[in-house]
Length: 137
Length: 207
Image (cartoon, rainbow over all chains, first blue to last red; front, side, top):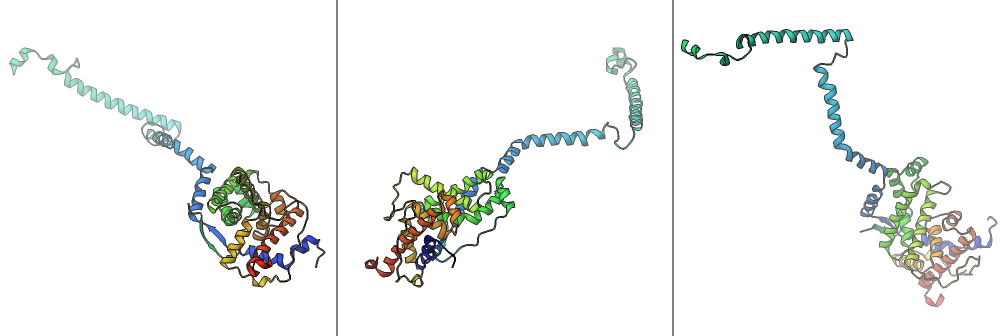
């Protein structure tokens, strides 16, 4: 037996060790789920990740609108007038020019039709008719 | 709130969950999931200690929650010089003492003198037969009452050593007293309990 001081020897006596055993074997209570749930709630209120989530939730509507605007800019507008991302700048300019020419030709044809329909002045027929014209009918 | 799911008479110790350094580090960053593992490992032990240190179980459940909330808030200050177990029991002990002081409760000191001296009391008894001690419900109740009648100083040492298996140096650190004081208080606490049990086993005339 190691050389113990008197107090250690007394603590190792049978009577003292028996008491120790009794205390060790006292029943143990388990905490309930309700208790744990309540503790979790209190802890969650202090968790940084939780605060971060709420912060994001505050900005969620603005984020949605922002994403919609970006999607519109990237998906809708390039189909109408932006140069093709795959072609060179010259090809893009030529394409835009060709489109403009078609538009101009189409526009001039349309204006000729309108002029024929409205007369030289470009005003509608109903405005140039005279009373005598009605007698000819 | 129902605080306890139930009790078992000879449940013994639930094997302590090993909390590795990674879990401790995550707890420092207030990781909720990691801290949950720490609660799983210690909630019953902390409650068992607190329940015997405060007057009623309802209050003990509140104090136990407070222990973990304080630990969660202050985990970044945990420097690892002592074990997490010691740190948690220190928080629990301090909360119990604070609550006791706030309630201005007069602490019922045990009849025997409890000082910081190494005074020992001779309680050797040749009739003492440990084999007789089958922990019946009646005996467990008696032991609980005897523990409850001790001073906080004796009770805390008895519970931390004999119930929670903390070594002397960790108890000394937890309570802020020298190791010699821990030993003498433990001896006195056991002697107090021994007297109570002797009355139960052999009748009041042998006490």
